[in-house]
Amino acid sequence: MRADIVILAAGQGSRMKSKLPKVLHRIAGKPMLEHVILSAQHTQRKVGEGKIHVVIGHGAEQVKAALGHYDLNWVVQEEQLGTGHAVQQALPGCQGADVVLVLYGDVPLIHSSSLQSLLAASNGERLGLLTINLANPSGYGRIIRDGFGNIQAIVEDKDATPEQLAINEVNTGIMAIPGNKVSGWVNGLKNENVQHEFYLTDIVSMAVVEDTPVIHVQPQIPIEVEGVNSRVQLMELERARQKQLATNLMVNGVTIIDPRRLDIRGDVKAGQDITLDINVVLEGNVQLADNVYIEPGCVIRNSIIGEGAIIKAHSILEDAVVAAGCEVGPFARLRPGTELQEKARVGNFVEIKKTVIGKGSKVNHLSYVGDSQIGEGVNVGAGTITCNYDGVNKFKTVIGDGAFIGSNSSLVAPVTIGRGATTGAGSTITKDIPDEQLAVARGKQRNIEGWQRPVKED
Image 1 (tube, rainbow, N blue to C red):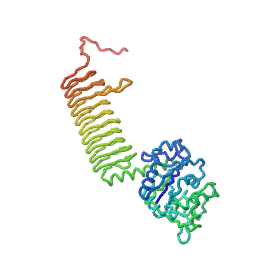
Image 2: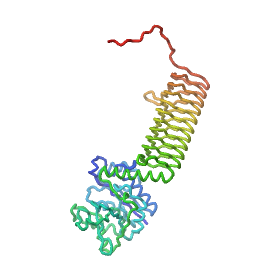
Image 3: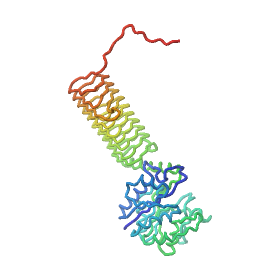
Image 4: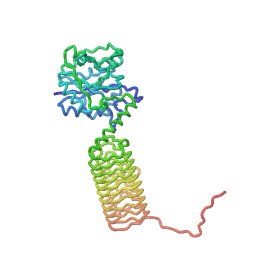
């Protein structure tokens, strides 16, 4: 079955009070529209082939620039004249589809399983509606049924009578339309309503007149079909999504000290017996092996953390690879290009950038190491810095296996510290050091007799 999917994403979202198009506001680190696109793609992989059409309007170029890497058919709705008009813009690309599934770019948590159920129920022969029963249906279109329970129409909230307003089964807007009917129905819509808009929901009454069966499916949980029209609703869906993500991790063997204080803003692959303490943020693509422990206040972004590694409190990792048994932090920063090999240690107030630190090596205190290659079993003393930048170009520091870098050393790149070499504390190293040699490069100390400490004047 060819199922084309039309995602409506042209609205301005004036209640968001933002210059950013509404569908680009983020939930769990991704634009709302991206969540819908991913769900649509997953659905198509399950049910068969098809195209995805995204109808854009306000901020169209911003939306395309943000999500242009997806294989989509972008359709511009120049005037926003209602949902029916929006779908009409996409119809030329839907020719040949067995069914057209309509989604919304500001309903980000819709699950593929619900969409698959709706498509299966429709099967390209019936008009399928995704409905839900709400305790407070205010603002939603009501599902109108006859005395036998058959769906007859959808009446928008603003057009409903008092009796219709009492109905609590509502339309979510998501529907599966038979491909051989969609063009005639959509092109036949009228705008004879309070808003003078072309309502897609009016095709329900058209289907009834033509004796096309109208069926309904309901989502597994109500949050799937909640939309975002304000920043308050955005916050509510953000927390709902975070709860879902945390629950998935816990079900699969991750201990989360307080799920309300974990934020996942990307895709996390996690092993078992991992512990995530409070106020941890995981962004982008993060991989956590078995037995990883992440202490409070850490931010892990696009990084891989090996088995048994410990990320201590308030550390920040970005585009880093941390091997098994490593310790990082507290208050450490691993910048892009950092690779810690097995059982390496990076301590408090240490910044590492574009550097490989070998097996068992230690940079424990108050240091900056950038553009470097550090061998195995190296000890880097407190206050050490690699002077890798001359104001224009970056240069590399190489430190051989077993070297000992004394505290407060400045290593002026390009420079090579040989295997087993030592630098004296406080040295400024500007030349290569051969293997096993000691380098001391500091001014000679003078002790001045009879020196008088300055006295503060009154």
